[in-house]
Structures are given as C-alpha cells and as structure tokens.
Length: 397
Image (cartoon, rainbow, N blue to C red; front, side, top):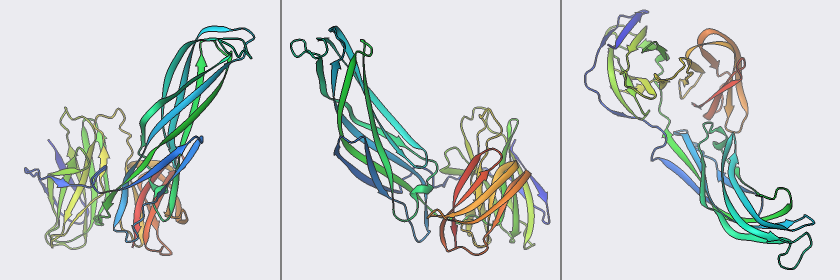
C-alpha cells in the first residue's frame, strides 16, 4: 500500500488516494521538436576533417536544449601497397587491412567504427625485384567503410549552447598486417566523403513551482520514500504526486489538498510508494501544483531505479527556474563533503560562485548578487571531495 505521511510545520494537510490515472505529456528526449543541421564532408584524404555547426541559441530564453545527438555517415575507399623488404622471397602471404573512422568533440565525444578486409595469398620476390613475382603488390582500391554511421549523445550539452559555432572532428586511421610478420612495409592511401548531422532536441522553458522545495526520492528496502516541503501555500492549493516510466507520460497516484484557510503556511510531506515487484527500470516522480486560480506548475522531476543494485543513485535539480535573486541546487539525498557551485554564462565566464561543506544535507543556495544579465546560464556544482560534476541549465530573469 502506498502512503503519504504529512509532517505539519504550520498547516494541517491530508492525502486522498486518486483512482483515475490521467496521462500528462512531458517534454522528454528525444522528441519531435528538433533543430537539425546537416554538413557535407567533401572528398578528402586528410587524416582529419573539421565539421562546424552553429550552436543552439535562443535569445528569448523561452526554450532550452534538452539533449542532442551527433552523427556522421562516412564512406571510405582505401588502397594499400605492401612491399617485401626481406632479401628472400615470400610465398602465399595473406594480408589484413583495417580502416577506422571516429567522430570526436567536446566535452567527451569519441564514437569510433572500423572495418577490415583480407587479401591474398600473394607471392613476392626479394626486396628490389621487378620481375614476376615482384617485391610489391597493390591491394584495392576497395570500399572498406560503406556509409558507416557513428553517433554520440553527449550528456553535457553546455559547449553547444550560446552564440557562434563549434567544431567537431572526423579522424581516420588505418593499418595492415600479414602472416609473414614484419617482413613488409605498407603504404595506405585513403579517401573519404559523407555527411555529418547534429540534432538539437528543444523543450519549452517551463516555470517550476517555486513553492515546492526539497523534493527528494530515496530507496528504502522495497519502498520508495518521497519527501517535499511546500512554502507560502495559498488557500485551496492542490498537490498531486505523479509517476512515469519514460519521463514523458505521467499519471497521478495521490492527491494532496492544501489548507483551505491559512495563507503563507508551510508543510512537510512524506509519501511511501511500493512499486510492483515486476517493475523493471527507472521511475520518474514529480509534484503537480494547482493554485486556486487553476494555474498549474510542476516540481522538478526526481529519478529513482528500484532495480538498481545500489541505493546510492544520485539525482539532482535546480530551482527556481527561471531564477531572479537566488538559485538552489538540490540533491535527492543527503551528501557529505566540500562542494563548489558556479554560475557560468554561455560564453564560459563564471559570474557567481560559492564553496560550501555539506554534512548529511542536500541543498546549496547561491545568491545572485550582483544581479546577472538576463538569459541562459549553466549551474555547475563540483563535488570536490569525490571529483564529480553536475551541470544544469538555468534561466535568469
């Protein structure tokens, strides 16, 4: 049985289990709202080729880059000259020629592919022989990679947001070997062509509910404990607990009616969710807030994996978003160690920063004094004690 346990701060609250399960759309990744750029890769035999894209930039701050993919589709034609350098001939020699191609870029993109062809057997005369058999053989040209696709989906999209352009790299390599060991020199000539594509998945910059704070989800044996605090409650505000298995479609599993008379009160809630034993994969939770005028806002989404072998899954969020005077960085569970939180502009400038020590707590507050220029920023929190980084997008208004 799933339960909600309210802990009173200044208001009395109650929970009613909701039977209808209404689906609510959610902006997830990937989704149809996509900006795509296609770049042609001209025929070349260089070891590297730069591919340049325009960064994602929305000066209105009404949308943000939720996620992205980069893909290249490459055809590689290669010829390999093998020359015998031994003073005696070699008969019945087989060769393996390998060509590799990969796309690299910031921050940690490295998507490789490769293919090999086998040639032979060939007979060779001694080094310097020009007759039949000679001391060399030309293998190819052959198409070793035929419209081969490499793709990457970097989790840190910060380098691709802002004004201007950004360049990734197509890199090539190759090699040859024979069953005759090191008796041969090789000369590999390769030419390639293709396309590179970048897809930006765009979401609206939805305002989060600023009255919902400290929303966390933690595993406790076979249950999931959800906790949150509401502040500055308005009369007749309604709260719903919602769940999703794909971060896109949510349904309500419980309903919380706010206090009907008090204004500006606060309350802490705890909800115990017992997943079906057959549940496989991650679960996503959020709180839906409906004010007396019918205006709807949502908490940040909190993720938990009931099938994880470790209960130490760390998720995080920032709020409010957009922000004005301060930003809160919130872990899903208490942390211990030293943390550095930085507000970074799209040009890479650190405008505000704060270093704190957490001892079993989960929240860091960064005051925006002086007030930064309106627009898109990145909030980077570094766990200095464990060498980990967490990056989120925030809008300053």
